[in-house]
Image 1 (tube, rainbow, N blue to C red):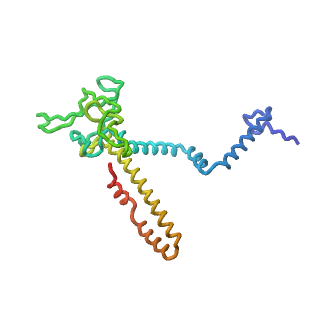
Image 2: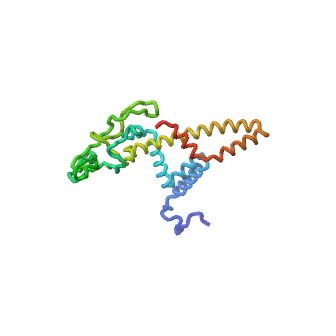
Image 3: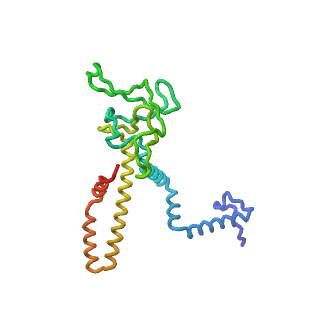
Length: 249
C-alpha cells in the first residue's frame, strides 16, 4: 500500500503535493513550535497568552499611561493643585476644551475663548461670568508657571502647556476655583506613593514577623498569629487614607 497522501483529502487543501519537501517543512515548523512551547519560561507563556487578549492589552496601555501621568504630574499639570493655584474668578467652572475653529474661522494653533466677569445694570450689578467668543487665548507649550520639584528632587517651573494670557481649565474648576485637571494628576501621584509605601511597609513587617514566628514556633507562633489576625480585621482603606493625609501634594 502506498504511503503517498490522498489528493482528495480536504486537510491537504492549498498544499502542493508535487513538492514533497513541503510536508517536511511543515513538520519541522510544528516540531520547532512544540520545542519553543515546552522550553519557554513561565513568564514567556503568560505574556504570550496575555498578548492574545485585546481588551487586556488596551487596559495595560491605559494603566501604563495613568502611571506615567502620575509620575510626571507636576510637569503635565498647568497649575498648582492647592489653593495657592486657584482661579478665584472662575469657581465651579465648566471644562475649557482647546479648539482650532470657531465662528471667526480656523487657526493652526489651538485656542480657547476666555472667560470674563461682568457686572452691570443688565445683571443687577451682580458678577456674571460669560465666554467672550470674539477673543481667542492661544495655547503655549513649555511655559513658565508655578515652581515644583519633580520626584521631589528636580526643580523646575516649566509646564507642558498653558495660555499666553489667562488660565485654561481642561476639566473645569471646583467650588474653590482649583483646577480639576491638575488635582486629578496629583491624585494619581499620591495614590502611587501611598500604594508603594503601603506595600513596602507590609513587606518589611511580614518578613520580620514571619521570620520570628517561624524560627521560634510554639506558643510564640500562636500569639503572633492571633495578633496578626486581629490587625487584619482593620479595613485597609482608612489606613491608606491616613497615609495619604501625611503625603505632600
